[in-house]
Amino acid sequence: MNNDDSVNDVESDTTSTPEDQTVPPSSPRTKEQEAEELGRKIAEIERKVADGN
Image (cartoon, rainbow, N blue to C red; front, top):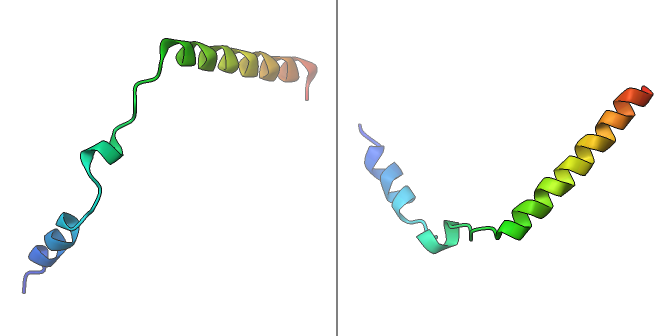
């Protein structure tokens, strides 16, 4: 008894298209903003560690 065919049938019935799974490219400005935000978070954590909190 081989159930591999039934598993493949279920997997092939997906309704998503490749466009649904693509992520639009981020603009350079967005990446820059993310980097700045991470820098602020790192600085905040470093301050907390230095303060002993």
